[in-house]
Length: 115
Image 1 (tube, rainbow, N blue to C red):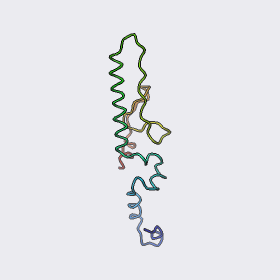
Image 2 (image 1 turned 135 degrees about the horizontal axis):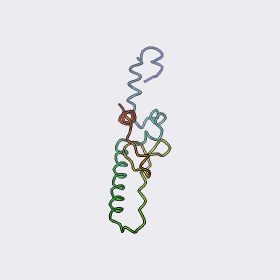
Image 3 (image 1 turned 90 degrees about the vertical axis):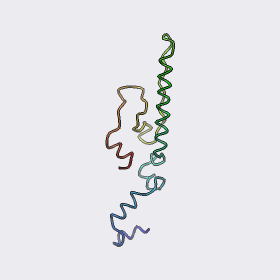
Image 4 (image 1 turned 135 degrees about the vertical axis):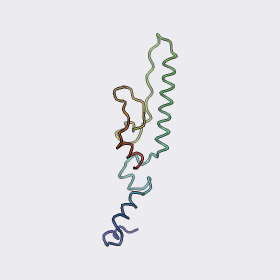
């Protein structure tokens, strides 16, 4: 595919947009556009969320079943996600402060699922 075909008029803008939109996630364009996030697939994000939820469940179980005079346990750290300066991505990851817990917005969900 020659991109000069777009300038020559033999490749339509719509066809070019479709080709770019459906590039594979491991393409150079996706890495340049998405950065580190392009390296993580949906499966990677789901596995990280499962690990985070399992860690929270174990922490809650251990916290409830500890001696009442023992020091409180530290909550688990979230699996680091790519992008946003190391902050966890949407998906219900654990946070230390309950005031920082929020669900993903509609725009974040649409971007994540490629809609």
